[in-house]
Length: 441
View (cartoon, rainbow, N blue to C red):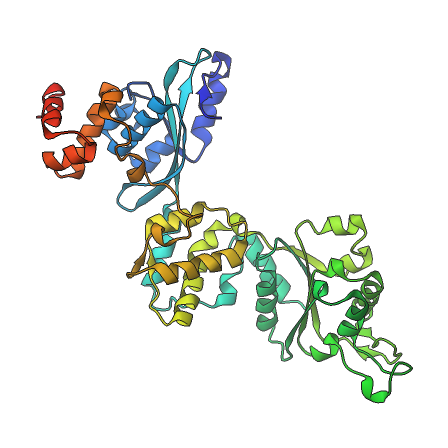
């Protein structure tokens, strides 16, 4: 929706309860910028009591936010996902929409601010630590408590593990982490079902015994033998032909197998990891993954990057460090505005896309600190400072908005009237006139 219509009176108690239950700071103003509502989250966030701000102009407390809300009301257009630092060390993502009644008449505006300070602080702390170089495999593990604990418990037991998740979510990295953490003395061997012709996949996995199709010298071991004492990682197991799935299910059940074309039983001495895309159960329902094979594995869903935003600061630092090492450059810190943009982006390409973005930063960043401008264009976001630059001639604005814009321009130029006039796009004479008009001279 581009605006919010007035809520029916009977819904007022529910609406009030909703405003107080959300964790984001919510501010409501009337067309003159007078604060109508200031929820509990806003009180905690800014340390301003409701009784001190309700009934007063928002511009008395927040200059840039005031300009932004007037712009929203003047234009009738919402503002979404705008980065702002309302006070030193506090970082928010701001959304605002105009509010109208049933006839379309303007009633005011609502702004919602989400606190993202923790992401920025976590990023800054990584650069302050002397041991900031972290273990890459530890870094890709989801850090939310239950998920992290589940992975670590899986690592402690030698059971087949089926990893489901979106492409690039980190399934292979987690399998490698478990392999190394288990203390396996054998190799980590991978096979991609989609890259091997179906008729050859069974031989690739179980090996070939030779026999009627060749002399004794044609026999060769498969991945299960090559990974003895280690692990086999089978990518996209749902693409494996049904006969090979049957044979793998039997091998997992009996902990033994035979090469293709042979009868000699060989012990299964490696751990098996397999992967499928998200929603693993649907492949069983569709018949592309045999139920007996599916239930031979323990299932773990690897969450996509958009569901593990708390990991972003550490992941960014890891990938920046790797790119810096490859390019033989120092690792730049991430400006809070850049970290905010990274935290708000949904990362449809998951870890490969984040890796690409960090490599882009390393290529274009010039100083010791990487800014939002160093990010790929698709990831950058609008800032409140940029949004409140003069975009509408003062003559087209309401008096309250005009006054606020003039005060903001003077503040930004430290009272320099010539600079403020240039910032506002008006002559110095026009500015002096406006200053007298509003009692600001």
